[in-house]
Length: 247
Image (cartoon, rainbow, N blue to C red; front, side, top):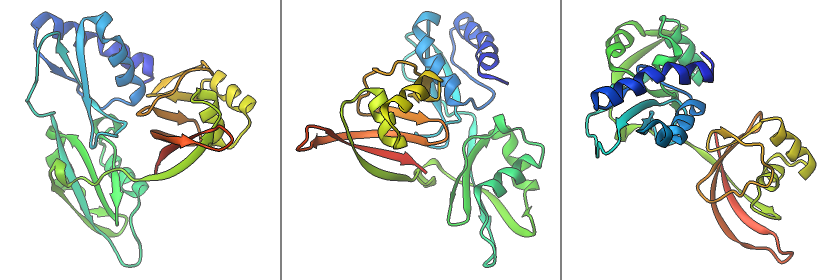
């Protein structure tokens, strides 16, 4: 399903939420292009929007659509946190191995959140009505025996980052894209015009867009970067910034 189709599929959920005046969870995990767009449209649609995945930095998330003035909502999201353990001293399982094995059971990708792999173990979230199926049927990956067990949110490892310090002439989007791609300002501008750059998961084509601390900048084929902070100015007048690249 493409992003436009996904947004269209949410229309019924939005209308139902407004009709019954009760919060509704989506029945699949959506990519950032969808949940971030819905968040920007919430005022126009007359709803409140939240989303959640395996961690706060997750891309794939279940969306919570709430009536305006609903207040805090304490019901748990309809997914279960899990851990897959097992392995071999001869071969360490990687992200692609876990994902392929889960999907090989017939579980669709949109029923599963992001996977985090640490030290040969895999952590993730799956809709609760599918958890028992996963636990009972995923016993081997390749020739390696594995065990699926339920875990808690607090036990999910955080995303890993590579921290980098960059000198930029300004906090404009083209300047930052130039820095992270190690390309010229004109090349960065072309990338932006082509739609290869997103800010907070929405494609931006304005090269002079002002970027601020806390923004997430994604450059196609280069990676995703979290704008941590401005740390000062160099002797030549350039701004020193810290960006964290998602691994």
